[in-house]
Amino acid sequence: MATEQELSDFLKSVEKRAFKRSVYHVRNEESALDIVQDSMMKLAENYGHKPPAELPMLFQRILSNCTLDWFRRQKTRGALFSNMSDFESPGEDGEFDLLETLNVQGNSEQTESAENTTARAQILREIEIEIQELPGRQREAFLMRYWEELDVAETAAAMGCSEGSVKTHCSRAVQALSKALKAKGIQP
Image (cartoon, rainbow, N blue to C red):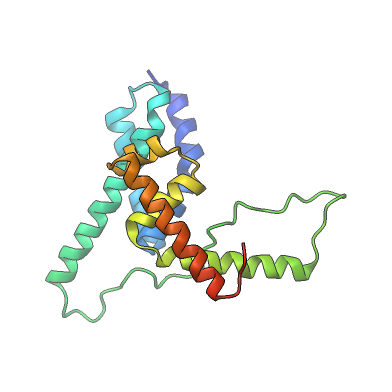
């Protein structure tokens, strides 16, 4: 059974990654924040009594379900209010950096030139753009496997599909990213 402190520590450890994942899915920071907060509340209210080892998988599943619910609500809202010109679509918000966690370790022995820093930032931005263009399931599998570093079984459980499907989605995502980045002159 997870203690209140263990639950709190777990939620603190996943909040940034969950937010970034949600932003990539819904392309709207306010909506992503709502999704993450709803997911955290559901985990705490309904599964806070579970062992700490089960919390990551439960949270990933809840987050996926909350994201799907958001899309369903948007689809319904879009159908009901399609004539409203002031309806905001996802993706109109400002910049968001997928790979901001890859900060250069600054110490006296290791420095990076401004040119290299700028080039790396531009490449990361191109990667971010291409990840956003992936189909939803491919993007979800790719981010879970390679960014959140979940294994195939954990990703399959969180996505509610087979391990083979996860492998297929990841393979297709990597191929699509590779092709798109090569077309832009970015080599691995």
